[in-house]
Image 1: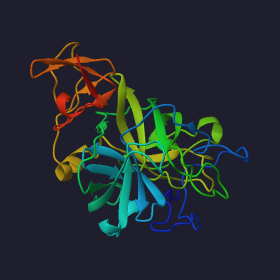
Image 2 (image 1 turned 30 degrees about the vertical axis):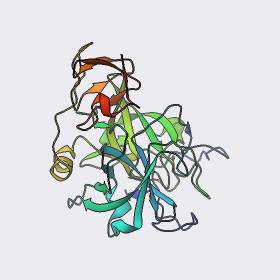
Image 3 (image 1 turned 90 degrees about the vertical axis):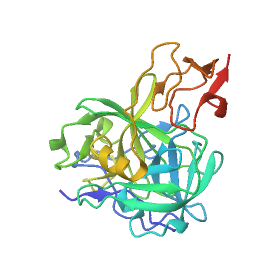
Length: 306
C-alpha cells in the first residue's frame, strides 16, 4: 500500500497544494459529513501544554509536534527534512495555534536516518515553561489513545486548518490492518471516516497514564485516498526512545509517585498530588510529568505552595 503523508507545505502561507494525505485502507464508498473535525474530532476539551504547532516564520501552520524536553520537540521527519532551522518556529502551550502560549524559533533539526523511521527532533532557541510529555513505555494493541492536531477537518477541499486544537479518541489496531511493518502504530478510523488529515503530521497521539498523558506516537500518514477513510499510521514513540534520547539526552522512565512523596524529575504527577521540596509542601495544579529545572519553587504554574 502507498503511504500518504499528512504535512502541509512548509513556508506556504495559504493552505493550498497540500502534499500527500493520510489515513489507511479504503472503507467503502461512504462520504464524510460536510463539516467534520480533525476529520471527525472535536475541539480540545482540556489543555495540552505539550502540543506544538510547527509554523513558518510568518506563522503558517504546517505540522504538529510534541514537547518532550523543555527545549526539544518530537515531530515527523518528512515535516522538516531538508529545512533550515531558521525558517521554522513553534507555538507551544496553547490550544490556539494563532495566539497564547510561547513562540520559539528552531535552532537545530535532527532527523532519524533509518528509512522506516519518520521521526525527527527540533531544538528550540530556549526552554519553554510547560511540562514535557513523557514517552509511554509501550502501546499495546487495543490501547485507547487520543489524537491531537491542527490538521484539516475535511477532505477533499480541506481549506485552512482549524485555529483550535482538535482531538479524537480511537484505538490501536494490529499492524496488519495498515499493511505496514516496522516501528509504527496502526490507529483506527472511528466510524469508518474519522482520522488524521493534512497538517496533522508530526502531531501527538497520547494515552492516559497516572492521571495524566503519555506520548504513544506521532502522526506520519496513511494509505487511503481520502482522510479518515482508513486507519492512520503513527510512529511508535517507545520504539524510538533510544534514538531520541541519544540526541536530546537520556532520561529515567517516568514513575508514578506515592502520595505525599518528595518531588523528583521524570515523574508523572496527577492534579492535586502533594509533594515536599526543600522542606516545603506543594500541590500540583495540573497533571504533568516533571523534568529537571521544573522544581516546584520555579514553576508556579504547576505547583502551589502549601
